[in-house]
Length: 138
Image 1: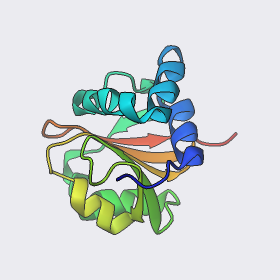
Image 2: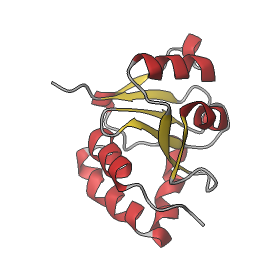
Image 3: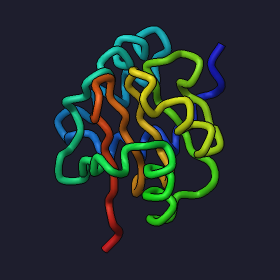
């Protein structure tokens, strides 16, 4: 059984990093447990990310330690929130180190929310599908 949905992280992550024309659908499906699984299946190779706020992590930094250092350098706190294709990780708050250990290189899609609406990470199914999600406040 999933933990309660962390609306602040989910809503902020969707509004900040999902393309505007897809946001309403994402928010609706995430809020409905029976439909949530359908949406999570699309995380394998997410095409709904707003490319204005994503940057591919350089190959030299695509390790757990490299991604952790990158996120921390941009203000990531010790705990994060996950939206994941993997049921055991979906809708969970975890220590950032533990979350990255479970996600990096595991071969399933996951969105990691570090600072709601400002900083996150996306791990896709394919090798090298690792993206920093960042919106700077003006």
